[in-house]
Amino acid sequence: MFPTAPSDEPIFNVPRPVLLVLALLVLVHLVRQLLPELDDLWLVLASAFIPARYGAMGADLPGGEVALFTSPFTHLAVHGDWLHLALNSAWLLAFGGAIAQRTGALRFYIFFLVSGLGGAAAFYLANSDLMQPMIGASGAISGLMGGVVRFLFPALDSGGFRRLREAPRSVRLMSLGEALTDRRILATSAILVVINVLTIVGFGAAQNGAGIAWEAHLGGYVLGLFTYGLFDNVSHLQDEPQPNVD
Image (cartoon, rainbow, N blue to C red; front, top):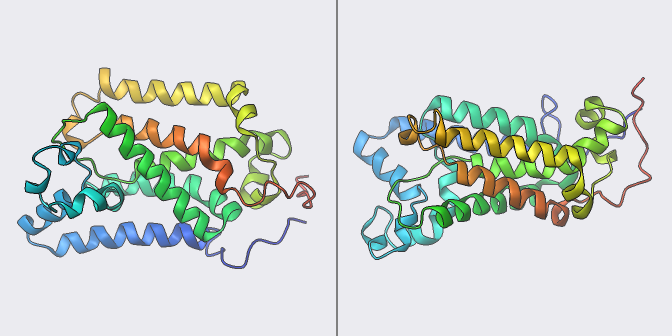
């Protein structure tokens, strides 16, 4: 038998914290559809993370000085179109469930935001004078991916994807040192870097206007990989009953 799942999770096997984040993203996009075009544009720019906002012109951009503090968070809730939202929602569902089950709701929300801040910080460091806005939750979702890889491979070694899906709290968490020397994690990280580099040298140049923020992807992933151990709430449960995977 599998360990009993926490009581605040299962609606269609998706933890409630993930559903709430997903619902917020959809709600924001739906509200935007009701706004006049100029009001919607103002909302997007006021919510977006714009590196140049932290320069001399910051107070003149939509959102003013308040957006200096809010936009590192609010950019996560705004998406370019339904396809952009759908892609991020799919990745949120893919990586968020196991994290939420292991951390609980509050830690999940904080980890999500911290990863998003990591993505914004990386985007700023690479583009400190850029006026182009960055929107979308991909930096935060990349952080979820960084957290998941620290217990993905132990799950595969002792039960496979079924164990990760149905009993993620029973899976051993890799220490940071172990994760940084594990060949599978290093290979996964290298593939992620290559994919994001291709957005620059390949199709990314043609889609620059769509806001493919590869810096945020990598920044969120790295911060998630490095900090997830601070949020994981079950790494001490080494004696939790193991699932029957026969």
